[in-house]
Each structure stands twice: as structure tokens, then as C-alpha cells.
Length: 204
Length: 215
Image (cartoon, rainbow over all chains, first blue to last red):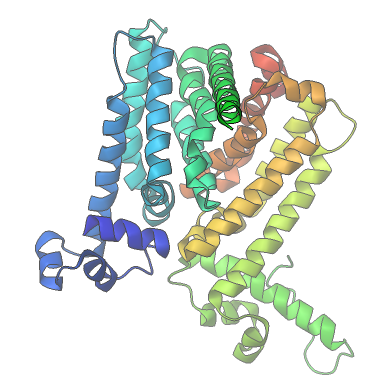
């Protein structure tokens, strides 16, 4: 039912989605729906919570205290962008519908994500001071992702890696570190593309 | 867009039909902005819009398909106005960091002068579902293109391969959204320094950004 809610919200909007859409999409009865959820909003909130959990898991799987903080932030960011690229409906739900329905639901996402990013930098010996507001940086990341999803180009979300890494680094390690990390991501991506092109050329 | 109060004289006035329709359209759109910002897209009705605009239902449906259509028309016009306002502030001979500061001040001034328009453009738009996504994407990229247009090659090179124009537009939109959401649109101009810094820093570094912010 959560999957059906996610799909319905991506196709239309939360406001237009009905419980009938959800039960039809999930092939369950209305009785089953009401056994799990009090109403449409409860089902939506559960879908948002599940999406946040899924993204957090994908990011956490990349964390490894042995690695440099920049490498961890980059790997975790890439994992989240790739997950959303594979599952555009998830991205639409989190950065689109959830924000439109009740912006506070997104605060939970931020409250899970920001402390873990801050902790990565802190453990690495960053002074703990914030260079710019991480809450604003989070909002900016959401907006960048939303713009791609709104354009119907969620599959290209991984291309935003340099920009998102910039925003995830700046508040904690300052502009110089942020721009250096973002450049490194962009250059690696360019190398990867060049290698792919060369490989494709060689195969021909 | 004209204010909802700009009504034409009643009775015989010798105005062309075109003038009358254009005035009615403007009033309806202005009323839609006001009513939707105050009550929310879902709750606001066409009747509310008609009452504020002082225009008849028949005229409304001659001009628009429905509430959403009227909202989209009003939104398009506001985006055009904002773009014209930023174009004026941003493109010119002054050094780039100054122009950035002027444009940030102009954008924040635009929204702070009209809190209902700010709420309408940044929050209520998304209540209409998928058509809002396309609108947002289009609008966003118009401002990215404008930001790029005013960048010289040397400044552009400072940000390297990072899409800093996208970051710039996103910074203003995200920060403005946060403030409008909590009803602080009128206080937006106090963010001018902070946002100028954020926009300049990817291109010119921290020292130049601090200088631009305090100029």
C-alpha cells in the first residue's frame, strides 16, 4: 500500500490521490487499508517515513570511519542520488509532494541526515564551527534535486554529485574544501565519461 | 500585475473591448494571487476570486478554464515581472559582485513588497500537482540562464566544473522559501548580505565574497 501511495503521488498529486487509487494500486481491500492506516494522510506519512529510512540506509552503507571524511560524504551522497535516480517516484515523494503537503515532514529527514554529516566532519577533526547554515544547505540540496525531478530527469540525478557535495561540505569544512571536493567529483566524472567513450570507441 | 482595486468606471466609458478584457484579466489574476495566498489553493474558490476582483463568473470562464488555469496565468505573469526586475538589476557595466548584490536585493525586495505574491509563487504553486513541476523547472532555468548571461568568462572559470549558476538560483529560492513558509516575507531584505556571500563565494572565494556582501 505504501508503494501504491508513492506511485499515485508521483503520477498525480497527493491532493488528487484517493484511497481508492491506493487500494486499487496495491490490490487490497479497503478493509485492509483501514486496518493499517487511519486515513490517507497516515498512509502518506508512512510512505514518507519509509522513503527517508530507505535513503538513510543507502547512505549509511557507505560510511566507514576508516576512510577520509570527504570520501565518506561523497560516497554517501552518490549512493542517495543513485537510489533516487533508480526510483524517481521516491524522489518526487520526498522533495516534491512531502514538501507541498506538510513541510514539517521533511524536517525529520533533515534531523536524521544533518547530524550524521556533521559527525563525519567532526570525527575528522573539523573545528565544529559551522561556516554557513547547514539547514539552508539542506534546503538547497532538496531544491536542486526537485528541479531535476520536476524536469522529468530524475535518472540524471547522479550528475548533481559535485553540487551536492559542495553543499554537504561547505557548512562544516568551509568554502575552500567544498569547492575542492566538488571539483574532484566533477573531474572524476569527466574522466569516467572519457574512459567510457574511449572504451566504447575501442570496442567498435 | 495591476492591483485588484484598479476597476474601470461603470456605465458608458468609451473604452475598447480589448481594454476592458485586459483590465478584467489583470484584476482576476491579482485577485487569484491574493485569495490563494490567503486561503490556500485547495480551499480558495472561483467565487472568492470573483468577489475580490469584482468581475462576473461568465467573464471569468471566458478568460480561464478554471481556478488552476487562472493561477497558472497569474504565475506566468509574476515570473515575467520578476525576471524583468532582475534583468534590470543584474545586467550592466558595474563590477560583477556589485551586480550580484543589486540583484539579490532586487529579488528580496520583489518578494518582501508583496508577501502574498511570494507565498503564491513559492508555496501555493505546488498544491496544483504535476503542472507545477513543469512551471518550476522552466522558471528555475530562466533565472539560471539570466545569471549565466551576466557572467564574464573569467568569473565563470572561477567555479570550475561546478554548476554554480544553478547553485546561485537555488540559494536564493531555497532561502526565500524558508522565510516565506514561516510568514517572514516582509523581512527578506535582511538576507541580502548573507545571500550575496553565498552567490559570490563559489566563483571568487571567501575574501571577495565577504567584500561583496559588505559593499
